[in-house]
Image 1 (cartoon, helix red, strand yellow):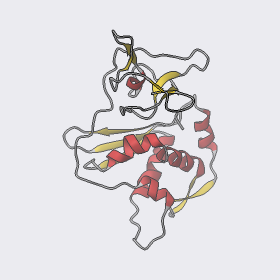
Image 2 (image 1 turned 120 degrees about the vertical axis):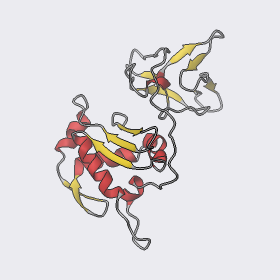
Image 3 (image 1 turned 135 degrees about the horizontal axis):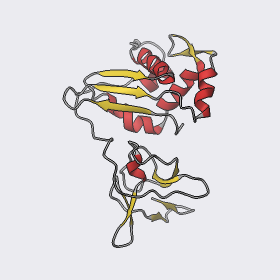
Length: 209
């Protein structure tokens, strides 16, 4: 769900990381539904877990944004601490318990573990996602209230689709890919990638990229 949040922080010297899960958002009804969904549900082939918290966690770790921005970088941390507040604390406990499993090669595939586990590598400094706010402007659709956004998390690849997404606050960590400037030549330039918006006519109907 686009409203769910998890963030990865890294110490610049020790290269240790903290993965933090967001707590219950009072303005997000899906969070409240997850809080009260207290039925038991099998989790990571270990034990029964709170169904709402498990479902929220697995939906997040299954998302493309999580895979691209967080999971792909976990292996470069010299150590990982998982934390969270409120519902996020429960998600952190479930994540840590499953990630620390050590299944045998002969064990059957555990779907939850496959999504949560990660391969460790040589620790290195991760690229900065949390940059100071930039001076570009947001373009908000008056009908939907959503903003023009580059699809994905902090995406800088050429030909990435542009669509409407929940508007970030100006001081939010991920707001830079929603900020645009008009160049002297009349092009809309994204403040994160410094690439120009264009129309892809190779598909029907044409899309913004």
